[in-house]
Image (cartoon, rainbow, N blue to C red; front, top):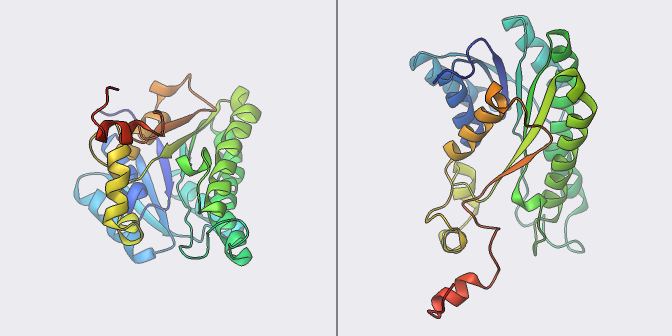
Amino acid sequence: MARLVGKVAIVAGAAVGIGRATASIMAREGARVIVGDYDADAAGIAAEAIRSSGGDAHSLYFDATSEESVRELITKARERYGRIDIMHNNVGGTEPGKDVDLVGLDIAAWERILKLTLHSAMYGCRHVIPVMLQTGGGAIVNTASMSGAIGDAGLTAYGAAKAGVISLTRYVATQYGRRNIRCNAVAPGLIATERANEVVAPPVQKIFEEHNLVPRNGRPEDIGHVVAFLASDEAAFVTGQTITVDGGHFIHGPTLVDMMKLGLSI
């Protein structure tokens, strides 16, 4: 398919994982893609892979925790391609061992995680919107997380930040929808990215898999395809939504897996 022909897309946090998969899928759909990342070398490799497959991509370094750096990313992207139609705010993360329960969490880590995860998305929206308005509108897709929609024993800062991303998405959609800017979010479950495989032990990944209704954990491409849809004109009447992509992990009752192990009917 070629759903994004003629469009220019920035994928922020595109060197690896979900961002890299999304950038590749968007390029295959015809978009000209800016691969933005703090890891300039990895971003360059990702962009070269897209070009080697026949796509149009250019890598740019930026620091998602710096508003000025995000603004510069958007400015450079516009200078190169003349317009920006799609912005995928995909930067975020936590700090294992520090982002624990509320009383025990490291307050400096709280501030860093909110800046990396929530502030970065706000910076991306804040600075791409004026550019989109000058060319008639556009589509913003923010990467949220199911951590932003539930409670958990840890990841307090990460969950709060991702909840903020979900709310930010609604506010942007509300404030700029009448000016032809759509804003949606995608909320992944456990996705087997390089980073997840580093910090989530195999037994924990197995637990997630047992609770999924689809018999596996997610892949980066599972998210990338949804982001590409939300960025396309096929989603022209979709805005302010958070699309859950979790293999059905969070839709069933918490006792389901234990009941199945007992051989009881579901």
